[in-house]
Amino acid sequence: MRLARKFTLALVLLAVAVIAGLQVIQVRRELERSALDMQHDHRLLGHTLAGAIAQAWQLAGEREALTLLNQSNRYQEQVHLRWVWLDGGPGTPSLVGFPPRLLATLRQGQDGSMVDPTPDPGFLHSYTPVFIGPRFGAIEITESLGEERQHVFVTVVGTIVATGAITLAFLVTAMAMGRRLVGEPVDQLVQLAARIGQGDLSARVQLPRQRRGDELTMLADAMNRMGEHLEETRARLATETAARLSAVEHLRHADRLTTVGKLASGVAHELGTPLNVVMGRSKMISSGEAEGEEVVECANIIGQQAQHMTRIIRQLLDFARRRAPHRAPEDVHELVTRSLSLLRPMASKKSITLEDTVPPGVMLEVDGGQVQQVLTNLVMNALQAMEKPGTVRVRATPERVAPPGDVGGPVGDYVRVDVEDEGSGIPANVLAHVFEPFFTTKDVGEGTGLGLSVSYGLVRDHGGWIAVRSEPGRGSCFSIYLPSGGTTCQAAS
Ligand code: ADP
Image (spheres, rainbow, N blue to C red):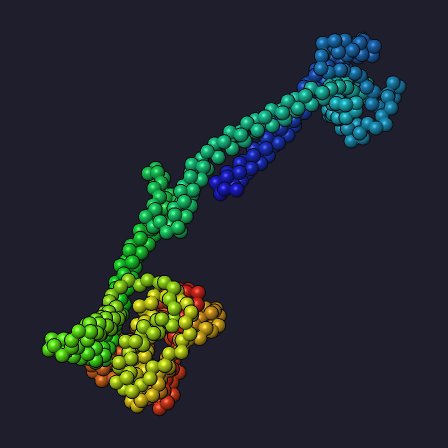
């Protein structure tokens, strides 16, 4: 039930109880007054008659006196008059059942009365004592209680009707007032809370002017102010988030460009061979050394080498390009192949073998460019960490695992991509900091300290994490965990 209705009902019930109680007291009082009135009337009549009867008794005798009393009945419509002996002498009726206390009162010369409940509706008997010489009797005045009962009935019915009418009027008025004063504003406040809860922070409530100063208006004002604060905070948050995202994106791009710089020397070296072939073949054609069929063959070779160079340059440009993050199903094998192809010139320069044992067909819902950036960073670090010829291994294994404490979440299915090197390894005091932004142990121009922190942010954006194992002097293994289902997790970048 609504608050206003409950409140109104409680008020009405209280009012009805009070009115009914007052009416009951009123009816009782009226009954008592009516009984007293009857007794008073009887007493008046009794005393008026008592003087006349006593006088008639003395002057004309018992018979005349009683005749006078009987004749008085003719003029009485509501009461019946009768003479009763009360002294036990001749003519005295049986006094069995006559209240002894009433008898004693009468003997003292005082009036008295009693109610005889049978037959229904009962009678009121009033007695006025009369002393005739040595004898003692009383004028008995009897009146039916039927009229009083009728009066009570009419009064009670009237009271019930009046109480009902008052209750109804009160109920209707209280309901209308309750709805207007409490129900409607509370409804408006509830709607406002619901709209704010659904994210509509522009919602406001305006209660009528005449309500100014009451508690509900104060609550409405407070809720309006809360909405304004929330709106401001959301706008500020959106601006700050956009700025932060843009900063992160700039940082990621900066890291990508740094990587491109590091790759460039290897790529330039890679372009050297096809360029030499192109120049040699073109010289053969221009000098006339190549003739007939050979010219066509030279042209074909020039075309193939040009295509090869274009592919290398496109790969590099592709890697460097700024683009909006976009998730799509990607084959891990292809991502690894693409990343390693740019790094091969650098590896071969140091006589390092890049071993890729990722089976085709392991699919992930990821941003290919971002994962490629992470793989490139890890493999490049591995190459930089190896002073001697050796092997960098890249593996991919599906794994059911629980995320570490700082990532949180239940056990789930992930694809683990390992980048393992045979390099210098990482001492424990360095290992604790490798994911911190701008942390580097490399010389100026060699390292920026961005690679691992940017990579960690990118992987966390995919709902995964990076783990590292390292043994100084033997090598390191960086493992990227990416959720198989492509779940997202917008955690710290
Ligand atoms: P940068 O490579 O520019 O220094 P990173 O964030 O990629 O920045 O790496 C931070 C540091 O972590 C490196 O300077 C290096 O000391 C250490 N590190 C990263 N990868 C390896 C690795 N495979 N072997 C040894 N040390 C590594």
